[in-house]
Image (cartoon, rainbow, N blue to C red):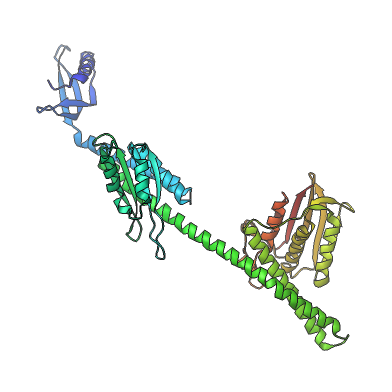
Length: 458
């Protein structure tokens, strides 16, 4: 009378255990109430034995565990929701592209709740301009996608009317019986988007689906705000690089003219003129400024992917000697010792750009070893590659800093406070070497100097 028909086989199992004198502890099953409703119960059953040891009956205790089961189900749903949100968080955090985030969220959420279709609309509020509504779709939308796209193209289309628009289209022929709509709310409290789901069956969605999607909408908003901020930063960065490139290009002409005038004045002066020293110092500073402007222009070219290379076959040994001669003339404080395994070493590449790398490394070696007086330069052959090596005996570079020194504008604060520079020489050098399919690396210890190696394949 109290056992559901589909569970009658349980009683046969129980009776057989009792016949064998076995006890049954906490057997969870379903039983019928007087009103016919099934409830969860936990059964404890023991055999009743007379004085002769004969089993003459059974003692059964049934406990109603409906509330316990309800709690377990809620806990399981909560755990499932947390796992879903964690998975969703990982998915949306892997991208900083708005369209990718929209598509990822709507695909995953529509699948999770078993929706027939899903639409994610997004329109961030901007203080300066109204941004266009962006959409992503998931599921079956053949019946009304064309009509929906037409409605969205209308200037009067409102983001907040997305659900009513879809319901209106559904009345016109699309087979949609269940709807679920979740607003996407920004941190400032503005509605910036909407998640709308539909299904052809009635009563398809429930409260659990709604709670889960509220969490997903919160995660989606955070990811979208990060992506929007990233887009703004990327746009500003592009404008900054464009400005640096234009400014550097425009500065080239007056600096070149100034350099020419100073050289003309210097040549017209007679030996022994006290002003000649001043003119020569001004000329040195003009050369330095010209070099800095050239570096800034190279940075802008690198960022836009337009740093030019002119490849040809040339002698590396000769190129390094020329670079050393240029630096040694202006740096009397350090002796630059050169060694090459070969008297001549031919490779293919951009001689001018690779000479620029060597000059950068030599300038850094001298700049960051003020207490030393020696810099070693060598040309080697290793594993079929030409290796240019510049070694100084100065401050050295910590392991933490070594991972950043090739980044744009990076300068180690603890060792560069009294040393001029913008931290772009190594950045430019790294890009030049990379374009030659080579490798620029550093080996260093604090207080023991540094060795920079440029490896260029033949």
